[in-house]
Image (cartoon, rainbow, N blue to C red; front, side, top):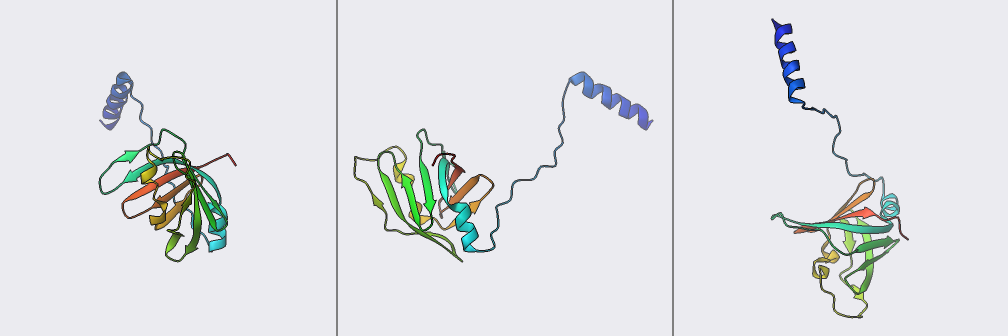
Length: 149
């Protein structure tokens, strides 16, 4: 009886030409660091912005231009549509603290999504293998590690 039912289900599945894929993959976990020095070393380098996700609403901005951030020891650099900016950052028990004193070049007027690049409001960060997520109270910035220097 059970063999007949199994055989019938097998034939039905083959006749429908459907493929079922079972995977044991789990979502990637954020890296945990033993100390700030180790975290800073992993954070250092250039990161390319992939998306800005707003919450509680579900708006997502995927930039059409290249926007990047770069961490270098204690300094933090980033670009807007036209201008380049820099500030200072530090890691603390509370998370990532970016100074609100940001200096930018004054080549021209930034438009596009430049107004959304308010990194001084970042509270936390999460590092994955090649992904960085910076979070504020209202949005999160998703970056991938850049191969550019």
